[in-house]
Image 1 (cartoon, rainbow, N blue to C red):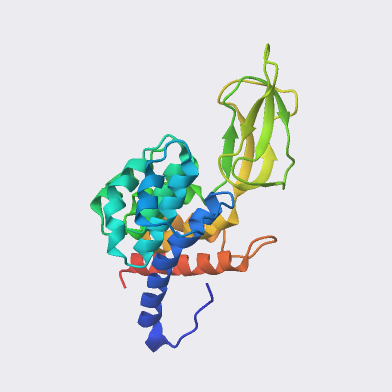
Image 2: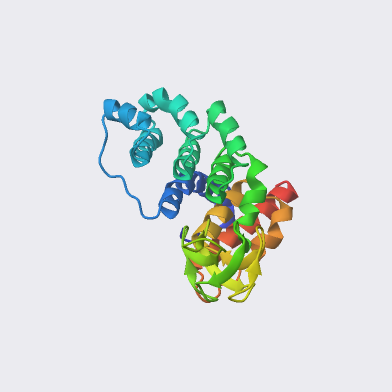
Length: 283
């Protein structure tokens, strides 16, 4: 997002335009951050969308259909409304990637109460990426309920082990992590193969908390990840819409550019901090 420079007299217009731009753009980038480079380019017919939504054996078909529906929603195509009940149903799918996709799509139907209610439920999902997309989408409804999740996107993420045994770290500090990156293995007594610990979120390794060979039990903290800058950027955009003064401490950490941080992150942090202060002042 390019920095906008206007005279004081044009400030209200600038702010209104900025808000519209953020609402329109915020929910376009997220799926490509969260889907591990999945891309669905072929346009589907109505019949294919119905077929793909019902396919229980190939979840990527359901994702493809959801993307097509989202494109129709973005274009203001009323035919998309026939599948709204299907989107709500898929928000309860057993596969996290389907729930992630559904949470994003519902963010584009910002006048639909069923979407809003379902997104509130998804804030309690077991998967962090589902919660994050739900919080981002709720910001488009001007609903601040997801603020704790948005705050978490700006903070380090602590990895815990779901297994007991001997820890073998795989990564070093400053290593970049994608969602599902293998972080460590746990050697378990009697098991032929070690259990794997994969990252639920992207980020950068800040610190390994335990040495190789350490005995761990379920729930032990083993690693801390710094937040991924793409997720930081999305959170800052959402907090522009729903943030309060309580969020300023988290936002301020990104005001100054640092090595490896994209310039647009610091720029968005400034815009978000300014907007939060403006709301707090009641102007």
